[in-house]
Length: 241
Image (cartoon, rainbow, N blue to C red; front, side, top):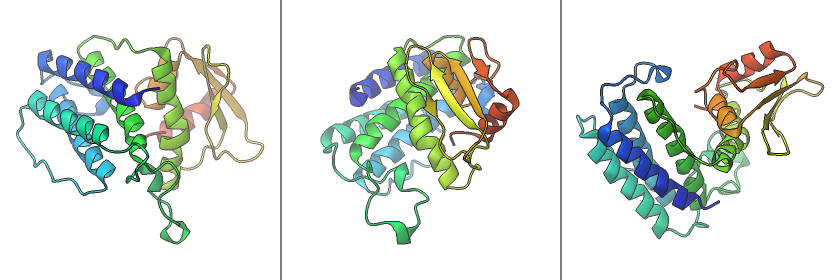
């Protein structure tokens, strides 16, 4: 998957939507956030990620107030241009290094390259584009494979990091996501041997949004085979920041 092209496409959609959305519109599943706060947040994340890719501390953007769409356009371009200029295989600071004890490090973790940020920021933008569109009663038309890749990143990168940083406990049940048409399931790591298995099935989009805390377990189109309460307990801890 060409994550850099996907990032550019998603950024364009995000900016177009931000320019016509009422900045005061609430995004209730993100606490007290409004559209304006969401747009500024993603701008800050893009700016920060560009620094991480360069292995440089980013210059703080300040507290504002900002023209949110203009700030987003500037930071989106900064990230896109940074990633296009750098060798995808070059070392970068990434989330894969977080929580790894220094005495266990022999250098950057495998996968800690600029290419990591191609994928991470494409998915960050996809999820927040859904937030923005859903807040104003619209949807995101992204292909199933993009949502499947987003779910895969949660299972293999984001949730292991949550456990590694001790933000959540290892899963008490063997939770596996079964996306429609994917063939194989995606299982959360870290469950104890012999733990009860629970399968959560649905479209790749629904499961990705569930994993990111945007949909409840009882949302239409999501099915559970096994102990629902165990699945709810694991998901309720938060698979992502």
